[in-house]
Image (cartoon, rainbow, N blue to C red; front, side, top):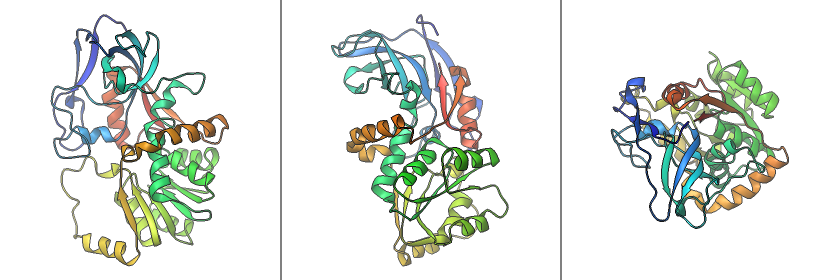
Length: 339
């Protein structure tokens, strides 16, 4: 990476279904100049996350869509290379929202978290010790609320959110069932992260396996996927079960509603008769808990109670391919692009 120009990836066209390489464009531009109160950042690591697919659409979501020709959205670990803010100095490394580009200008007031590699690896600020970890923490803490002995089922359990959910639930005394794709991910959940049961959603008898794994029903289902996994979970939900809805990655590329009968009335009847709590959320809904999360997660990481895995991609030019793969479930761990 050089500091003579800014290399960036912009949204070239809105995808119809699954994104393709043609939906992105790599371009170069002069370096931006910071104004008073701002800093110029060199982005060192870029986070890739499923939510980015929604930002590529024009429709209403919980955040403003990326416009055609705009830099793709994303969190970054960034180094200050020029500062016009009194609290930030050249060489400071911060958690930022620099997007899919090598450089960015940011308001110094928004850069509230300086990073120290002696405390935790810098990339964890984009994963277990950052937005995905905080999402897991607050979704479980505020909505799932597992009690000792209850059964917690986690979809996409080998990803950065799901893996963290399962480990926190275990620390709180729950029984954990993780769902992932493939034998390698199943082994990781069971042997490295300590899930009580790990299941492969691709198995032809997945629904039967899930039923056998949850003889006392399901008390908390942390939803990251939707689709056939959700279909298998619903009949097993106990009265007063809680469902934090974090993501629906199985449907992000849908062009229309799924074919088949309308099951909305059936789902609503399950919510009513089983007294279910179903709540969609994003981590910012509970941002007041962020300092508490940093303290608790920092302690767990220091004590080796929480483990994580990263899927490192080398080079900004490979970010589009990596995002497409992430949406297909090809990644293994938190996807981070090294710029």
